[in-house]
Image 1: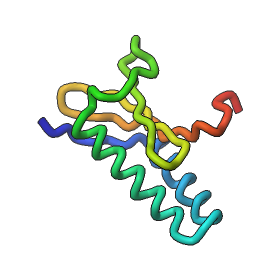
Image 2: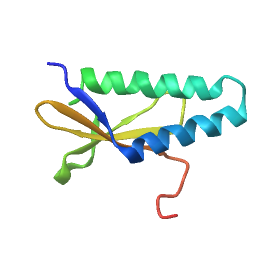
Image 3: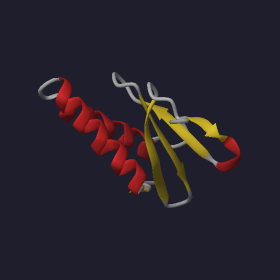
Image 4: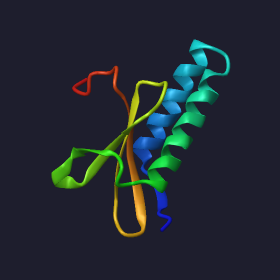
Length: 95
């Protein structure tokens, strides 16, 4: 089965901010981050059950990205995978 990917506005904002941040750090790094996000989302789409639960009671799972300190939070139903956030693990979620 192939699930349809639906990226939330918050996740799109997270991705754009990550790209902008890494562009300022080193030439080409923003593009590498963007590619890694897309690769990770494709893995989620192929194996949605493989990731760990973040909030089991709500069905929210997370997938750790390679290389970059980010996790992708998502949930899914029978036909859609909802990308909820692309969270920088180096940031304090309370601020």
